[in-house]
Image (cartoon, rainbow over all chains, first blue to last red; front, side, top):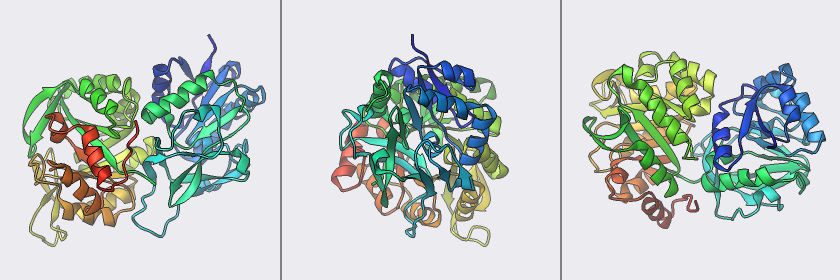
Length: 207
Length: 259
């Protein structure tokens, strides 16, 4: 049985990710142990919270290095929400240097219109801009659940796999080689979210 | 474009689904886990559970209910009722709740909002407010007063001021529950809802009074709410989740229609 590890770095409740994995037949283990992460065949890198404390916690536990090794070994990695955000070079949140797995930065939503609420919270469409095995079968009308006040601004268009409109389009799914990440929460997005997780379970890391 | 949300509220007492009218006369109307699963499969956008269990020794039943629901319902799950501390919030989160609702305990001790926001994230702390209409006074200039303890104790506090204070303390969302409208099925309190929705930058959920699909439309459009909370309309089988969503969608409201 291949080991799937959900990286635990004190950034939110990971059991909902674990439960959704269980629903699609993935028995994932939650672990904060860098060595355990290194032995995984597949890694989920979730997270909710602030970029500053997330980076401190990752480094303290040596999980940033373990994550880089897993990626370099070509193993499939799925980032979710804060996991996606701290994959870029820099976040406006806490003015924090982040992992730099993908080129670009993360900015805060700023609107003149008062009726646009922050955080961007609720269900929204995810328009595929580049086909990817994890997005296979996702239709135009399918919506995913979002909760975030910051959004990614990738420097390279080739890393953008889907966009979502909240006053302006932002990248809601990004990736590079064996790394794929979503700004939305597949574990809270009903049938289509479970579909994405199921596809992650069988993804070989190529795209 | 962000969709408006349809949220079902399930009042749970001793592990059973209950429904009140004007906050009294509660009666058991079924199994919360079964109902939650049924609504989820019919396209519900979010679930809220309120624990209205009277005795504290039965509180753990709620954790079991939340756990059972979280295992089979993959949409956001919000839980409230009797949350007095970060420890209460953390227990519910571990059982599977995404968001935690605070109400009476936050009125008595507003720092609870900030403590929970710090511990579980702003976006996961929902300030639920029970509000009744009164003659405006110097203490309650908006004419809407905060009431706690399930509608029994008026606090002489202005609802508008409390909403702004809740946002400042770190609440990520507001539930606007009108006690005057609760369980009456004559429609949401639109004036109250729009007043608060325009005052804050965080999402606002209209609650209390829905009886007809049109009421949901009014709360989202006239009331400017980001989401509507329904209970009786669904629990008694008068309407299904998908019927309500289709009605709103056909009237031009952006709704998630694929599930």
